[in-house]
Structure formats: structure tokens, C-alpha cells
Image 1 (tube, one colour):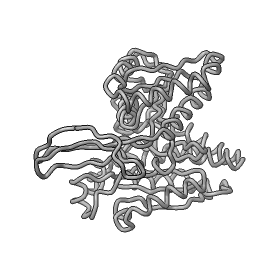
Image 2 (cartoon, one colour):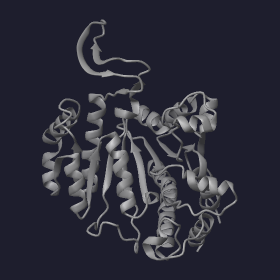
Image 3 (tube, rainbow, N blue to C red):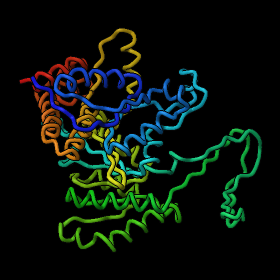
Image 4 (tube, rainbow, N blue to C red):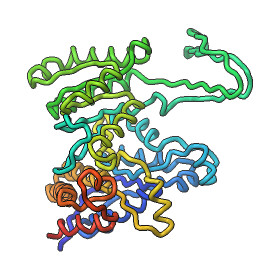
Length: 398
């Protein structure tokens, strides 16, 4: 079989634990037998981030900006326990947070639907896409745990060093905690613009939710920008297409989503989108059945799986057990990146390969060959990861 050629490379960002192992298996079983794969490789495994002082994450982000397309494996964001486990000198920041900060993009996460796998919410008939703001908030925050009693306040100094605003926060005791977070008008506008454009392209309703009744300045700023952009740039187009924009409080939106048939784009702030995307994916079948793409305002794309590094199965794998990890979202990260590379390079062969691989993956699941996360949903006996990948490959070769 003649291998399909790639004109230009994509940035490949390797990851941690079980997903790192499955990442390699996907390449060996489903990509390299069919493609002359061209990538610029960056090892974002925790050991290499420690070794490079996390410079590798910055280099990988710049590579995505330069090449236009990247694909990323899941990575560990270390906490105190992970810091001790891996012997780290620092609790390095989330690689995803760093990449999102540098690209200033919006994350769109959409369930991968398969015949025979019914959503746990019985009235959901259509996919629900989560649009997650990928900048600032808790992911770029400063935080502190008090080691003695004291007073906490929020202050803002202008460029001349003059304090122009001060607000009391709390009297703290030893062990109490405090956090400060921020966002920028530029990033919020980019987020809103991306959401409205995506809704127009998909011809789906757009919901945006926050908590402006509590956060009367911070969240209100998000709401105002969304409504301004809708009125000045998108109302006529939405009305022409027969789609709607709605603002809702986050709790009301969550309740509305549960009662809906799906088929909308739900725009959420950074932390809300992180949580809700996992909830939506699990309710549609599995977090391993959720595609994810980060889109920057200037048209750069980073594809990844929405899930983490599957730590529990990793330790079982290290003990010699066969494990049943669902690789679907990781496969779709690769196909998304390859399809976009093919689109940008005008390569129908490459884009066509990505489409065939996605179809082979969905057909494999629909035929009853499923991993452990999906088996209870369709009454089938689960297979291990390599058995699943081999079955997908047979469909590609057939």
C-alpha cells in the first residue's frame, strides 16, 4: 500500500501516563501503516517539563502558532501529591492553560455519537457542544495560604504606581486561603466572536451563561460584551438562519440543558467549561467520546482529547495487566489535526484518510467491539485497548 504523503508537518505534543502509551499505540497501529507522518515532536511529559523548566510547553505553543495545527496528548497538572511522586522542584502550571494563554483561543468540545450508545439523559437527541473560554480566571490566578493572621485586600495600581482602587476582602488566620484572578477585554471579545462565528457555521443556537447576579462586575463584563457583539454584529445573521442567542445564569442554563433535546452550543467561562464538558461527555456515553479543539482568533488549531491521563489504569498496566482504555477521543484528536492539515494544504487524500479513520472507529464501536467505559451502555463484553485498535485497523485495511 502506498503511503499518503503530508506536505507540511503538524506540532505533536506528547503526554503522560496511560495516554502516552496509547498515543504511541495509535501512531503505530493506525497512522504509520497508512501515512508518511510529518510532525514536530515536543515531549510534554512531566519529567521533561521538569527537566526544561517548562520551556518545552512554551516552545510547543509557539510551534502550533507557526505551523497552524497541533495535536496534543493528555498531560498531568501536578498538585502537592504529584510533586512528591515525581520529585518536582515546582508545581508546574497546567500545560493546557499555558497553551491557551499563548494562543488566546476558545475550546469547542463536542460528543462523538455512535449508533447504539444512547445518552444517559433520555431526552437528548442531538449533540451539545461546549464552548469553553480558554484564557485567564482560575487557570492564571495567584493564590496564597496564610501562615499567620493578617488582612487581605484587593488593590489596583496605575502605570505610575498610584493606587486607584482598594477593597477589603477578609481577615485571615493561619491556614486560610486567598486567590486573585483576572481576564481581559480582548480575550473576552475573542471568545464571544469565536462563539458567534461557530454558531453561524454550525447553524445552532448559542447559549452563554455566567453568574452576573453575584459577580456584578467580573461576570457582568462577559455578559455585556456578548450582548454588544450580538446586537452590533450577529443579530441579523442569526435571525436569517433561524437560530437564537440566549444569556442565562449558569444554574438556569444547567437545568435548561437537562430538559432540552440538545443541539445547541453552550458557551461557558473557563472553569465552568472545564467541568461542564466532562459532565456532558459522560452523559453522552463517556468522557473518552468527546472531541476537543482549541481555535485561536487568528485561525490556529490544537486538537486533543478532553479527558486526562487515565492514572488508575496506568498503574494496573505497569503491574502487567491488560487494560481497556477507550482511545476514541485520542484518535479523533489525530483525525481532527490531519483533516485540518489536509484542508490548509489542499490535500484531499489526507483529509479523506482522516474521515475514513473516524468512520472506522465509529463502525467498530457500533459493531459491538467496545472498551470498558462503553460496555455497560450497550450490554457488550469489553475488549482491551490493543484489541480495539486492531479491529479499527482491520476496517481501514478492508
